[in-house]
Length: 167
Image 1 (cartoon, one colour):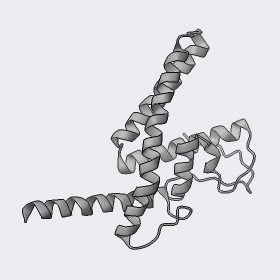
Image 2 (tube, rainbow, N blue to C red):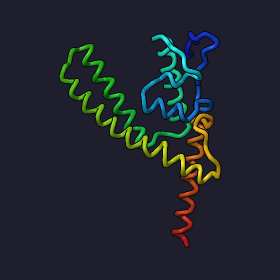
Image 3 (cartoon, rainbow, N blue to C red):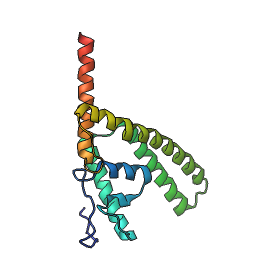
Image 4 (cartoon, rainbow, N blue to C red):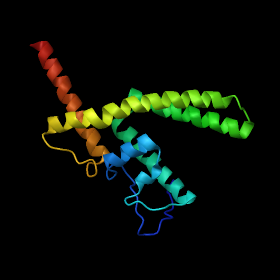
């Protein structure tokens, strides 16, 4: 499905993991603020937010197609989906008990996000920089580049472990 662009030409947004900076990717994950998809901050209306949400969903699909799902990311997506279903049942069917389940699942989600945020944005970046031999600029390195660097680091570590076990 092709999205109709409803933004004026001066308002641009990221449309793929090949251009979305890793800083913005993490900001969206951490804050649920979809306006980080914008190349420059602007005030947007509800229709434009929907376009940004679709663009981010497309980026998530590209990420999954390119790198697959980690266990942690799978848990996050499952919890978000479950919360969305519970909220829709609450609104559409009036199931007031769902609010308790929404609160519990939201708490679970916050715990997972807090744990992953601390490890992913900080220590992983440092490990990649050490491995690659240069400093990463989170505003310039794209999502795709960051996870390619991470995969290269993982392969190197696995090779070193295998070499150590052999000899």
